[in-house]
Image (tube, rainbow, N blue to C red):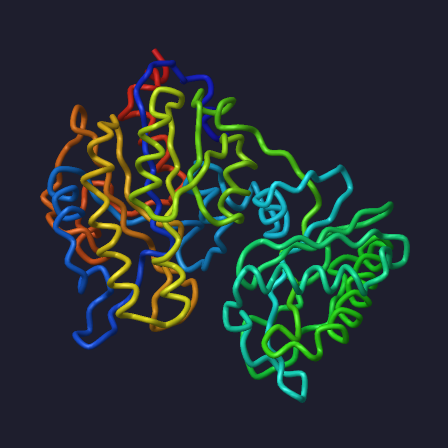
Length: 405
């Protein structure tokens, strides 16, 4: 039986900051056969490593490549294989859509298709959000309001991403993704992943929606197709307040990450245009919360684009913001990622993520002096599942009582 941390929680005013560099982990590549972290100039992250304790952690389990949802749930201490959720729900919550019981949500990617209907670009050249809004309006104007009794609701997320919500009776989220995750092949046909009548009905609705939407988008120069994934029924999770006694706040620019934060009960704060601005927003609200999740997307985005040099620059941007994060004077500061995104692989990977934990009052230094995937292996935290990071942070913040007599 797993330990119920809520039975050990004790309240105090100590503060924890998780600064999450999305997709920060990598593998050796580039001109010098180094990871992007090894290649980047990171004096501030290295100082944290020298003053703190390091390790590497598996977002789900060794060898398992996580999506962003499971990766972040692991970060927040939720066992990803127990608390499973589709990307669609996170996207819908992230854009603030008022979901109802029975709604099915899916994440959409606008994509570029060739004349044969094969995928050229799964992200439609990362079209501007303004183009996305125009295309969503175009679809809503031309699509029927309902397909087989289900209301069709679309909402822009950001860039090439949008949200599909199906609202009606007798719907089910057991529908397979239509995104094959590769180019050069056609989108997959929506199919039910269970034998239930509701799943078959929902898959049929999605199939008709995709067919009609693709015809409407045919003349678009980039976004002439769409890919759906992460079908999910509206679900509620136990909050971080209930599990850990934390008053938690999230500062994240991208809707998906705001969605997962909302799902675990975090208050969504306003955001700035840069990591430095977002750290200052945490300072502005410093007296209001005891846990801060600050998200930095661009280490993941550049990795997915296969741009080694750009990822190096983004890591250096992260490093430049570390003094400001330290100046908040948190009792616990953790820098890590939700998964690895090697630019060489142009996507998420199963490699463990590096972690540095900085807690001046309670830390046991381990001798690591560089923050990178290779150096952190020798750290005192060792290698463990990412879900344990939250309880380690709670311990260093003095928020866990002794277990047993």
